[in-house]
Length: 89
Image (cartoon, rainbow, N blue to C red; front, side, top):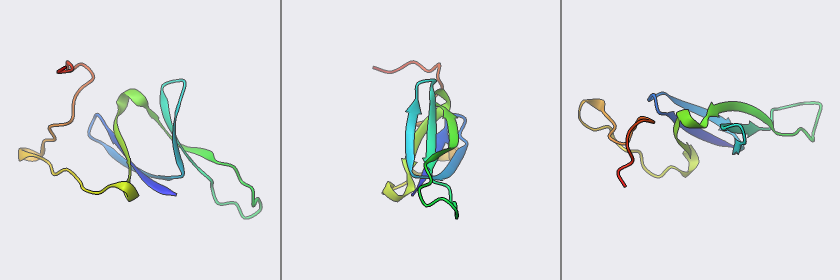
């Protein structure tokens, strides 16, 4: 089980405990986990969170995170871009 940190383009950040992250064909990211079930020892993974891929800036498993980027002056994060920003290359 991992703690996935999902950062949205809007700047909001969510931490979701899940076992797996997968894209679905409808344009969403799904986070899956096996929910505790006292009666079923063979419980299957269930979707515990869904995010629109276009609204997601980044996803990282907290357990794999080595360092965190510090905000710039005035709390701005230079790496946040809008969908309409031109790609520089």
